[in-house]
Image (cartoon, rainbow, N blue to C red; front, side):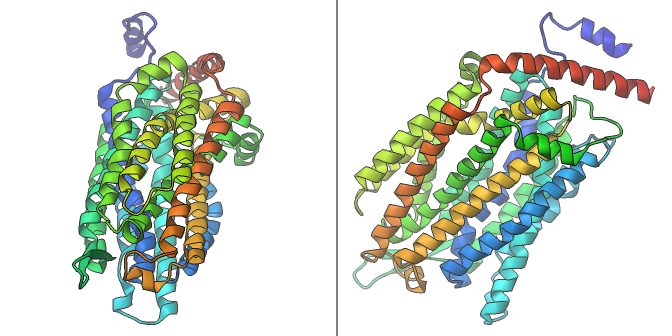
Length: 487
């Protein structure tokens, strides 16, 4: 009765599950925790493997490929576990933030342990790399699937979903800033040549100490997210989820298929951007450019976060993401054609800024698009499958990372990146090959993202209105049924 009286006093036309800045900031903390560990692994682990553990680039490529085969089982498995688990007193998804925060952070730390100090056996070193990386992948999925699903039950208000997606992007920026802006200053040792010029090599102790810092920060932020979020949309007290039907429905759904493919491309490009570290180290011979490059890419996003919610309300998510990806595609193609010279790093930085402006629309709206696809599936099939959809989407993003790492490392090996390159800076021929890799792949990827959003993704602003209304009505019915059962 008290709840009904509260609803009656709400302003007319206000959504019953409307949220504000406080809820957005709470959700933001979770993605910051995610990105502290994930960005550092994406940014530095391949360099740690090739330059510290001295594992050949083609073997590292195979490592990333094989470990992702397990993710084809691991990610749907986590999706099923989370979907079938009944709600806890703290909610259906929030408890995972509390229980898996420490395991995922410690798993990240172990990835950067220099096992070569304990053994010189290359097989043992490679096995250790496999085990620790698989462990990290399993723990990260175990916390990321419920965290991503959490957005769907914090609110079912479309504007609230955009708010959560926006704040998630802010959290990602905070979590990603530390590895991208600070790590380059701490994880390399500087060397001076006889002629006075300098070059950098990867530091084993520096990489581990920075991993420890990310480990501690991620735990603090995960627990902060747990403490400051609330699940407003009631979950079924006794979930009866037919996972077979849920997965079958996904792959018959055009919005989901397009979402999954764009997830492969978006995550793949984010991962591929880490290859710029080889470009800075072995072409421009200035690892500090990594800091400038990160600022060039993420500063536009920080600016556009202020305007994106209003732009989404006016134009729609699909429409805005399509425009932004087109902008990024043109800039990436221009960079490949220009091919900046060894002393023209400033051209590369300008291009990164332009790409960052276009990509910001894709990044900021991405998680709201995921929530829209979840709503679409619920409205069309009647099956609530937040965690299942998010698990498959998580796998698609991991698949993108895998493809980026495998292709990138194999291309590095092909252009001549050997152990010799870990100890020197520029080498004619090899360094030009690295430049080609770092300009061609983004041009292809951003173009593909634009084409998918523009011509394949069907959920326009107008088509989403009846879906939102149907889902809100269904959520109200579940909420009333849950309250009746509890009474």
